[in-house]
Image (cartoon, rainbow, N blue to C red; front, side, top):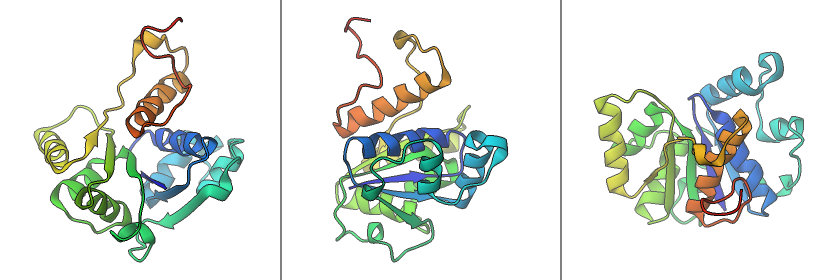
Length: 199
């Protein structure tokens, strides 16, 4: 089971593409999307700014309805959901994108949302926790929070494109970032060719 948190920062397409790829790979996924993230999903991904309220609806519109039987969805404030407990077994948590507010909560142990609590659980139980921070430039508070999260055991994957793959579209850039996340999770993919392979 992979928990994917999508928070209120630009770039929710990264989290959505990750959910698509995990489901396509036959992995169980639990998605947690904050209200602010749903607003940004509508602005950045919805035709005409359409508002969505569920991952199933969004994936269906994107033509990615395969694997929906493996998808669970939890409300961001549902502190009784399974990912809030250390006794619930999950392989990894990925927060993509990770807003600076969510980062601050994770770095300080303020687990007042389901994403924050799932991160707290992942870190205390020694499970993989990948944060994909989406902010630039970074101020000192951001940098210190990233360092705290890293010292606590989180992986920090800044969504920086790799131009050696010669991306031609925004989708190519997004797929590169999602591929890097999948690499950390140890999941095979074909989103980009590794360096050194034939182009």
